[in-house]
Length: 366
Image (cartoon, rainbow, N blue to C red):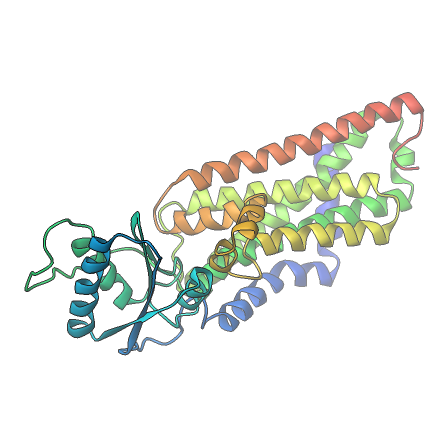
């Protein structure tokens, strides 16, 4: 019975040209457009390296005199030997923004507690890698800085360009729109009185909802595969050795999105309200997850950074980027747990409303 309902959903979906367009064309267009538009902010499309590099620094009032003296010697040597100039600023957030926009290669903050080094988390220039190695070798030690040589070792850490970043960020955003497809499909069933005809069997109602969610997961699965093939073969983007975990992560997001659409489509009575509500939730999740603005900008503002961490897309995007670099960290665990908790919470809401429906005798399709 369930298999027949699932096959029916698949056939109905692929009969509409707009659905095929949404599934195949929109993800690729979003990645290409956002990757190109943000190439000057997250990564560079050209390979030329700017030789006139700039390092921003902040010296807080009351900072340790010994730290200031060490920093002056470090600054003097780097300025001469590496052709890097230092510019003093006073606003930390604006300095981080300049680094993210590649107007500067790094920001060094000097305080009473020591030194803080900020660099772009998405596309660190080669000069910044060399400078950071020198920074660790010199300012990270307590020896006298009167040395005649500095060991400059390029730090081997993967950096990503705008296309790599938006491959993962936009994939999450487009998967959130699956909730709209599933929600509208559920609402159409209510309009055509499908629920009224099958409501005598509660199992059938549940199977109908599960078939809708399965449809959303199937579309998500195909979108992930499509993005993987295009990004790997055309954009030359590596998903790393943990690509299976990245695939599973976005498939879990597909389940979350489809479940959200199914429950909202079932309980919301007006189609306009349903569409607007799902769009607001999807866009909000996408914005907080870095789908419209790079996460480096959002993280530079404390209150915004805190709010972003409430969105599962924030953790999924960060986790996918780390996994593509060959690293499994706590962000992956948080992303999985947060998605599962949201899904469980929605299922509990559905169960509670179903019980209330039984008591009141007012059915969902009404």
